[in-house]
Length: 367
Ligand SMILES: Cc1ncc(COP(=O)(O)O)c(C=O)c1O
Image (tube, rainbow, N blue to C red; front, side, top):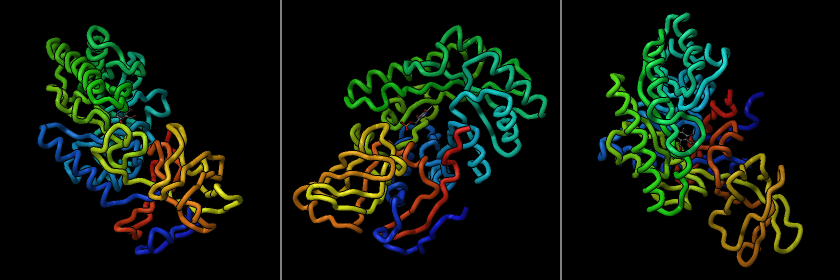
């Protein structure tokens, strides 16, 4: 099915059909450059997580700015990136099962592939597939630095896995990663700093322990948007995996304003049934609510009161009572990544005009 309409470049944002996922390219590019400049000053690598934008265009912008590679969460995302010409991929997730492992190994024909593990049987499966295909893939051990999601304890468990990787045909031991997801959105800076520093130090310690055991760690990767300037100052961390910083979202804007919002959903008022209520065409199929209801941008007195599948219910008062059927409303999603995953295309705009409709090729690639 072709894209149902294709607005011409130069069209004013207000003329886009809705719901539309709008990216302000100037702002996104400034965010990319801001993180990269900070990292350059602090001699830190940037390996942005592409799970946010899911699109080779933005990965290439990050690489052109100086990123050393990109992260992906899924093989499907990595396939899109490699097909789009991105050559340095770290899958910051466990890839389990013969079907996915075969696809992972195939990617190594065209790109440098590194994957995270936290399980010995998974290491053996990766090794068998890579060596049968005559390929080498990089493997890093995921260390649980406090999030208690995936990952093994630093120390003996990490050492055991690292030794297994280093002695497995088809695999190259590359180092360790640890994602401090439990603190990236901590609102209080001092608390965020204390906890993220502890997490990063635990990871660095695990890497030092491995080096002492004769296992060199080229990669000691960690960090999210909310901790870039904390994790990124801990000696021994080699690179940051920040993802959300490129567009920001409502949730992260409550953490800090170091990066600016580049992402919004444009909606149309489709009904003004009674005073005090306006209804838009952007429901939960157009904007995610897993981190809360979106915010109306730039219209005083307008507030999102609830979303159903295809409708957004706004409470309007004061100046916002002027909203009429057909008017456009910009909404700030509280969670960018899950909202982006709902769309086939970005409407990329510059100075209020459409620059291009860009396919979100990695959208829905959750296998
Ligand atoms: C393993 C890993 N690294 C990095 C990130 C990037 O985090 P953020 O979007 O906070 O920048 C995530 C986010 O979920 C993640 O799961």
